[in-house]
Amino acid sequence: MKNTTVLISGASIAGPALALWLSRYGCTVTVVEKAATMRPGGQTVDFKGTTHRTVLERMGILEEVLARQTGGQDQTIVDADETPLAVLPGEFTGGEIEIRRGDLADLLYQRTKDTCEYVFGDSVTSLTETGSGVHVTFERGAPRTFDLVVGADGIHSTVRRLAFGPESDYVRHLGYYYALADLGGSEGKPVMYNEPGRMAAVGGPKAPAFFVFASEQLSYDRYDPEQQKKLLMAAYADGGWRLPGLMAKVPHATDIYLDSLSRVVVDRYATGRVVLLGDAAYGNTLGGFGTGLAIVGAYVLAGELRAAGGDHRVAFRRYEEEFRGYAKISAQGSAGPFLAPRTKARIRLRNWTFKSSFLLRAMLKLTDKFATGIDLEDY
Image (cartoon, rainbow, N blue to C red; front, side, top):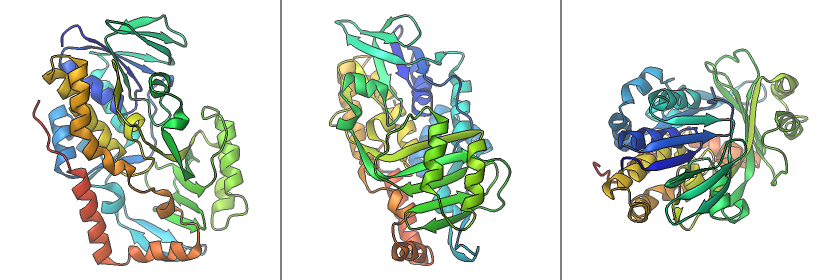
């Protein structure tokens, strides 16, 4: 694969993970990212079971991930008077290994920045496939041609839109939005509060405030933090518990991210020399498997390219054959009704679930089964 040039759009988790493998296999890799820098902080992400651990080990980053892990904390569900109602165990919310998204992204970036080219503050604007490559234009940079292009740019993938079609054809809104807001200071032990169709969670070391709320699809600029702040405050107007105080801090938030809970449904992962990876291909917001799917998907895609000697037609077909069955977990359910049930009765039922050790063990066993549901090739 020496001298094979690959453009990866997206520098969150899937993109740098793929860059690590492809540069190791001899490719010349460029990663383009719309943000000005690697995004720090964010929510925690987790890994479960032997499949995830094996890929991290083969990547050579397992020990570093373990060194940076946060250690899943129990989270107490409380009512408006702070009375404990139930406990979400750390093993359920944090998997086997938990790490902040920003820490994992930085780790991958540090491992690849000397062997791959990173272009921040830019984005792909057009893709034109030729007989020998893909001609790419950018918002700011000069046009370039690459042998292959990978869309690892999330649920709202620009690469998918340009190569496959409009977002509305592939992204299904699941009736909820979520927000992460850095409101400053520590909020003590992790707690979660619900009202019908609304959830707020605060506390824990360096954790941003976390919100999930039911809503029809909203129209707003995803890159405008002021719009996001107004939408969040409107969604939690007249709330109880600590919500008035939290909303009073939102206008001064140093960092905020608001997006929909959505699911990606594509009938194929590749078209020509363009292929999708991670949330761009099989995203399900807050579904609990996104980061695991990203690193395993990167491992399989890069491995199949190597096994095929860079023949993208063979490799992309094999990637889909090997991975689609494993990725089907992303098509299951939605985190919205679990995190922010729409009625008081459903909130009580959800809380009761965590009081049953039998149901909790069953859920943990099921997630472990999904996480290990692929036979890893040793490429």
